[in-house]
Length: 90
Image (tube, rainbow, N blue to C red; front, side, top):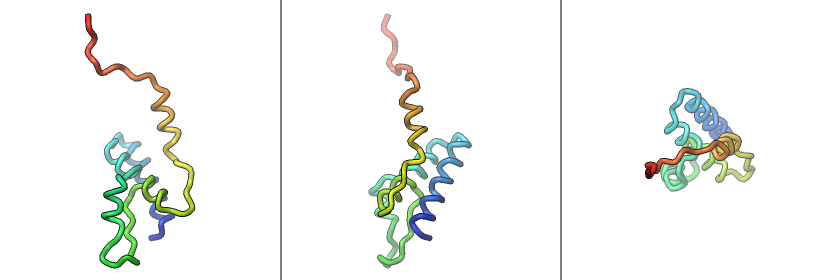
């Protein structure tokens, strides 16, 4: 599997998870932590690339980086008013 194919698969899995309200799986497929990615990226042979399924991490590894497909979702979340989680004092 090429890096480009792995990014397409990760993007598809991320959006599929989000559509099913599987938010933890969305996060996994959208942005696998870099440390875990490096641990899982190479098998015993350095030439045998087994990419993790996380679009952001794969995009960072790619020399031809693409615009983040999740940017609109992040911007929407940032623009949405957040309720305070602090208890109200009376």
